[in-house]
Length: 63
Image (tube, rainbow, N blue to C red):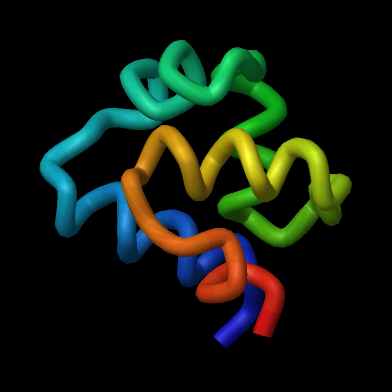
């Protein structure tokens, strides 16, 4: 599973909308959308912010 699909799946399991996760992670909704669609590969810093916002271990996203 690509990183974008994983983030989308985890976000939906938490019951969050893209706008909610983007705000919690401090990134734009457009950027999050591009990540989830596989158009952008986020930096480690961004992945850390997303993991923190989703309340998951960072290592889950970097496998």
